Every structure is written in structure tokens, then in C-alpha cells.
Image (cartoon, rainbow, N blue to C red; front, top):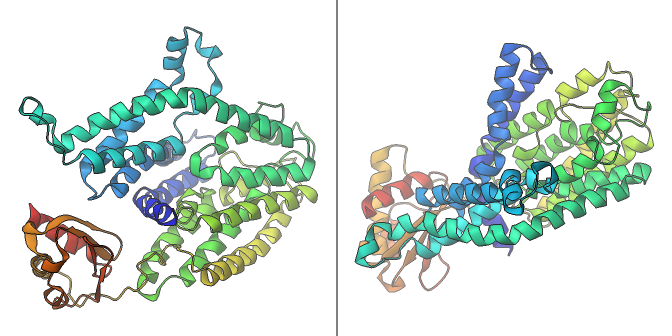
Length: 476
């Protein structure tokens, strides 16, 4: 199970790598003009929003691609197909038609169907369909639809079944979350802490939006965001469901990013630094935390639970001492600066003091847990024994290296599939006895790992993608 989540986390790295740039574009836009009246600000906000608002689609494509056995484009296409099927069938308009009721009478859960949970589910189903049907040969009359062309068709069919199940399950989940939020809203500072904990815990599924609607908007009469910015609430109380996020997003998560960078394997520090720096800055400046959170939530889920608990603690502390600030977009520096002038902001600078403390807490706890339990955060995945390949850069070098490795594996007669992770070639062969390990090692690769009767890994290093690409060209 842990390997499954680690593989899922790795699959999300491609779409997650896009998010920091989008978050920064939106943050700059809101900095220029939070009301989006300025043309340049509106342009930047819309540009960034086009990516952030479609995270679910990116995840559907990324998971389908990453979880498929040879990362073929038809798997990614199938992920998109699956997502479009389920979100169209369970859209408010379609449900209204199926039930013969007005759109206004449709359960609000269906208005939130385009979430990360549905995206990941679509990607997983598409990958399963690819792994099962991409090599199937149909009778001659239907031969055109054989192999990879069959995958999107089977994905669409599978999503019909999934949609039928979600038609009944999804409203129950959504309604339960809303009722839960209404229940804890009467607990004061403790309720704020519980809300913060479950808000982060639900981020991987996108279901946090259901919970947010209770506290931030007018589902249960709290409407925390509107009242704070309109100045119609109670000073020191209104904003309690927002304020505690600032120390976490501006300081805590960047502290976690620094810990993950410091604990990354030596050969992968540059890779970890580029991701952690971009994601950490996005969290601090804009308050968009998904790029950083998705970088470790599946690779090290236990660490993510700790993050959720610390977020709950932050909201509890801020609510207890009545330190309040608010946001219209998210709890980053942009919204913090803008909220300072609001009449209901109460001792907001204390949130910065709390933030500095949380930076230290996050750093120390994350670093301790990562090292103590060898958690697989970015730069520490199963490929920790990374040694740079001796092959110098250049297509010809990779081509020659790939040709020798492929020959050593037994060539077309023996190799059934080729895949790669961050540093290793993952190959399936028919007969392990036909593999010439000496020939493979002659290319200068750091090592070979036989993981099963037909499974072998060749440790190449961080340039593995280029070697894998060349091998795939040879196989064609």
C-alpha cells in the first residue's frame, strides 16, 4: 500500500510542478489590484487561475500517465476522457434532467463534482484500463479499435459504472461534511482548530471546499470572509476561521520545504531545491499551498497528517488570543498586507510572531520525522542510492548507452516493457537468464537490481529519462 501511494505521489509531480508558476501569477495580479479592475492584474489572475482552477483535470491526466505501465500518451488521454465523462454525467444540469427537477433543487454536492478526488479517481481508472487493455487484439472486424485505441473506450465505459455509484455516494459524503462543519462551529477556538485540521486533511480529495463553505460563506450563517471585509462582524472574533492559516502558509510550510531540502539525498538536492523553492515562495507570497503539499502528501502521508494537526493548532492559538486577519484569495503575504488596514483586523502583527515560531516548529518536526522514519519526501524516494552516470551529456552518448543496455537485456526477443522512475530503468523481461549484466554494467551504470522473476531495474542516475527515451526509440 505504501508503495502505491509513493507511486501515486510521483505521478502527481508532473502537474504539481506547474502549479507554483500559476500561483505566483495570481499572487502578483492580486497584489496589483485585488478587485481585478486593472487590466494587467485581471490578465495575470485569469492566466494563473486557468491552471489552479483546473487542478482536477491536471491530476486526472498526470495520474493516468504516471500510473500506466509505460507512461503512454493514450493513458493520459484516457484520464481526460474519464474525468469528462463523470463530471458531465454528475453535473448539476445533467442531474437536474435525470431527476426531472429544477436546477435550484439539485443537491449542491453536484456543483462541486469537479474536484481533485474525482480527478485522481479518473486517472487511476484510466491507468488500470491502460495496463489491462493496451495490448488486447480484437477480431478483424474491430481491429481498428485494438490495443491503445481500446483504452479510452474502456475508460469511458468504466466511468459510467463509477458515475452510477458516485450518484448515490457523493451527496452523502458532501452532506456529511457540511453537517460536521455546522456541528463544530459552536465550539469556539476549539472548533476553529478542528476546522483547520480537517481543512488540510481533506485537501487531497478537494472535499475541503464543502467544509470551507460552512465557515467562510453563508451556509450556516457564519460568512467569515464577507463579514471581515465588510467590517460587519465582531473585532477579535470575525476572521477566526482565516487568521490561523497565515502562520502556516507564510511560515510553516516554507519551514517544511527547507527541512525537505536539507534532508534530500546529496545527488538530488538540486532537484529538491528547485521544487521546494518555487513551492515555498508560492505558499508565502500567494497562500497557494497545493504545489508544496502535493509534493509530499502521497510520498509521506504520515507527515501530511502532522501538517494538518499543526494547522489546527495554529487556528486554535490565533482564535484563543483573538489575533485576526482575513483573506479574499488565500492566506499569503498579499492578502495579509491588504487586510492590515481593515477595521476588524485585531493585532494582526502577532500572526507574524506566531508565524516565525511555526517556521521553527515545522522545520524541526519535519526534519526529525523525515530522518527518524526515513520518510520518502522529494529527493528521498526509493531511488536514494543515486550515483551520477559517467555518460556525459549529449544525444549520441545516451543513444549508445541505451543501445548497449537494451542489447544486454536481450533486445526485442526478451524485453516486454520499459519504464523509468526518477533514477532507474524499470524493465520487464521474459527470461532473466538471457540478461547479460556484464554488458549492461559496461556502460558505467552504478548498479542493477533484480526485483522479481521477470523484473529488473537498471540504476542510471538523474539522466535516466534520456536513456529510457532512446531505448523506446530502439523498440519502435
